[in-house]
Length: 125
Image 1: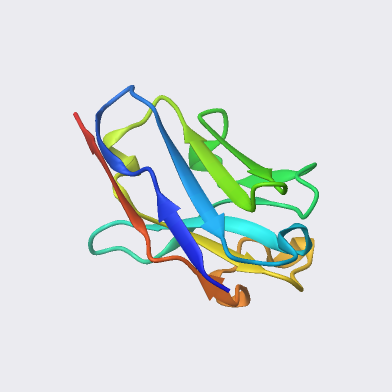
Image 2: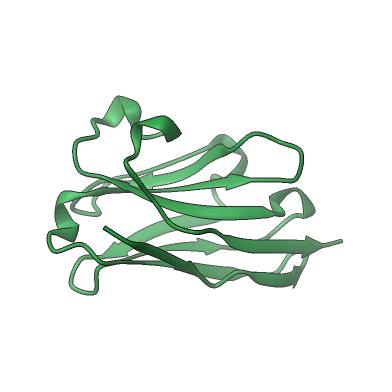
């Protein structure tokens, strides 16, 4: 399993970016997908997750109403649409995948088996 995250970049506060996570998984629809981020000097934190069908999404409180996670199972790709970006959103964003997660573990980074390489998002004030 390989995950390729892309779409990061430099954006001004209030701007938008869309991250993509392309997965080389034969049965992509069997995997829960998650986004995590790690800011300089801080621990990795959960950002968002989506269930296998794409029908349910979960977010950390700090991004609710601004970020939207989605997936296209036909394209083996998950997305994170980030709007109204703030300087505190600056971080390396990682996508993750796991086949056996239950809902209670979606926000737990150590529960995911597969990780992408990360894409840097920088929000200037």
